[in-house]
Length: 513
Image (cartoon, rainbow, N blue to C red; front, top):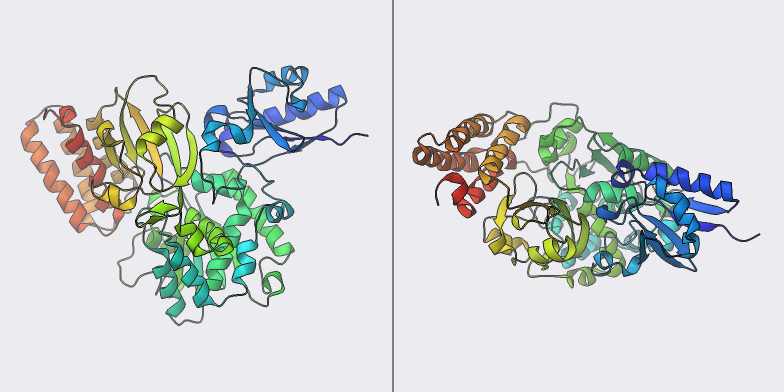
């Protein structure tokens, strides 16, 4: 009897929302009807949202892609001989040759969409655990030194050098230390954390164990946003498997070293993406900002030294240990080292995830990878870095994705989210939305954020209504200054960023042209 043909249908949230579960069921039913043996793997997503659900077929060791596939297409695919790589209107050719993927530099996402997310054997066969095995032969200081060599900076909003946090936790004496993963991915247009947790969960687990070995922490917590049910299910199953095989627990891979890890699901508050609010939530309290100092690296979870990183930061660590810090540092430019998963969303023809080294231009991402606006109209603006990120005009699209280059234009790379707008966008309305978002999501602890955001909405309403516009724009500038200087955290402190950038780059929308 011939070997079954292996097919891949993603279990990723994007694909499932677009009908991947129904496609998978239709493939199995059609194969059974035709008496054909198939092996169906529910893999993670490749990150090409415009062709989801994507179906891949292994033909003599080469994957051939078809998409976007609906359940109504399945019978026709069988008729066309897609199990042998046959031609069809939905055929995209060998997956690895698709331009959207071929031009990327995938380090963190190297396995995502390729392996079975819940197969440790598959994970290890594709390079997984190499970083951990290297780290188990090193002392904590050497591990932290490797992270320093890599130039890794936090892949969240602040882009703080990771090794400084690591060394602070390592050198602070305590009876217990923690690693906390911030998976409360709430920025608009971002989905990299979710994608990696659904498509390669053991990578995050490995990264957190290495972080524990590098800082002296023996306990970890993944703080996951409640809106990610598939990520929760996959992570829970991955954690159980990791304990079953001794990857987690009192004796990591027989090394005699310990690390315990659990999953915590948040309550849906955007503010808990800020590290101190997240720690408050983990302690069972209301998610509110803590005044700093002390820093979490000195007194974090339960007042113990705590390393807080987001998912992508921790998922970069296994590659750094497996390949060496210099290898990672060789990607990127200036002080922006390594790769970044840029996420294309909004009015974009080919939305999805693009992992490449720092230095790629915003124009390359939007036009070459993204294909421009889905509407076919000219792209007018892009907001980079989430709802508190700057709105950049087309004249700045040649700006390289680089922390310092963006900072020179009062912008930030943030979590790598890029939301695209065509020429029908009203930037005054977007500025109003920034204040409204802050008013809704503020924890309420400090006055500049709590009150300033509400006043911001009111001022913007008067500007939009052309009520004494010049005077209200002056009030708007003063209000932004107060929020920037007086807010306790980035929620209030960065709300002026989208507002000020909109006024600066698109003055005609505010009656200033």
